[in-house]
Image (cartoon, rainbow, N blue to C red; front, side, top):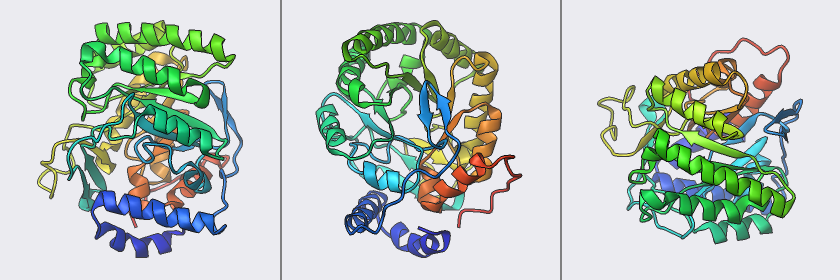
Length: 351
């Protein structure tokens, strides 16, 4: 879908409730795909090896766009080099009551407090098994809202065991602001314990399935430097395969006084860009290439993605940018990152 076409459709989509627009868009694209009118694949690029996986291009879709793995072929047709689904929990759960998703168009931002709404890990696995998508698939796992944080490891281990053989990589989401107490798993003692258990299970599953599936941790942007140092140190200690920086932020910098800015939840989109990039730079300084970084947060144009790569990321993920810019953003970013030498870029706005 071209830039001009999406700019014409966006007012219609934005006139709908955000969750309704989400469902409408996927349903419409699914119908087009079934008519054989949507046959795209990954945008050609020199493949890059990250975590032992060969990515056809460095642009992925972040978790949350397709929580249950229901639209893999549609997303693949948009040109993504990899797709991440979830967050999925052991048991189905409805998430927080709506309304729980809010656009802030004046700032190219979104606030969500979805709360890991999903159909459960068994449903996700069934969807993945049915799909014809054979690209790199990340599966993002979390804990059920009513599992005490002291027992969180049980939920992550259940999900890891069930998705392991179907995933290209597995993401441990300990940074959503919308599940009570989840972010305390980023504290040193809790994280050390959790990573030890997950690494042990990963190696056990690798033997069982004769397949090594990388383990990735997704962190928050709202970390102070000593916390970033602590997390990076623990990731190296436990030989974790990758890190995603970052999730949504609790900060309201950049949206103060705008409609919906006072809604509870995590903020994504353009206002998150600088904070997320600062976390990437700090991680890169500490990790020195020992663990690859996947960048997420505020990528609204090719220049934003290039900035993440220059800060130390190996791959990028988009979500809010897709809502504001449309599917052509995937091509814009991939072509810019695949060009050699990389062009000098400026963002041209959200249109």
